[in-house]
Length: 224
Image (cartoon, rainbow, N blue to C red; front, side, top):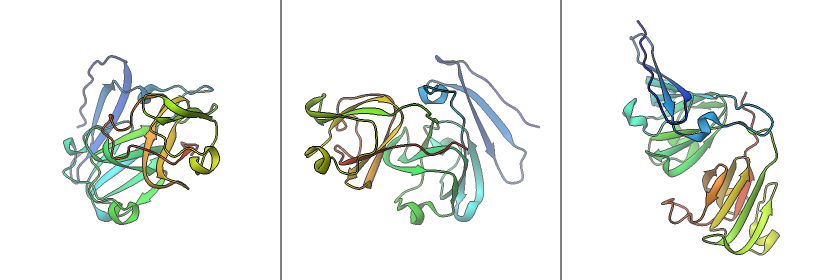
């Protein structure tokens, strides 16, 4: 029989997760998330949920874990994760727990071998669902930490801040609207980082593996 539990949280937003094991009946978990992305409302409509299924082995083999929201520690459900299938929506996956380490953007599709297809050096340890945003996109980038130095406001993608603005670095930013991907190299290459609305005074102090960025783009992928 299926069983479940619910526990209260500060936001009251619902997160649903399902964990499946070969040969056993499905178990559904429901809990409240204190993560604002789980209950995010866009400027023009309500966020649509995504769904991703993680598998222990390559080619969608072994035990699996189905997730429809953020998960800060995959090891609570799977000892490892070598393949996954995004059935709907977009996700960021991380090679360390608590949304740390190297980040990888995943849209709808099948990923039979995470390490070879995405260049991952380790298994997926945490994931974050990216809410669908239908309104305008707006972000202000700063050359130095703590919102200092040269600054520019963006409302579209920028493939090279040096060529467009003569900025040598982007070390802090303010995201006013939309969800963005930041890249350490020009032309959307190199390591990336996912940013949602908020203030980011210092990428270095955030403990990220990247401390400066040279290009950035809007996440406009459909959640269907």
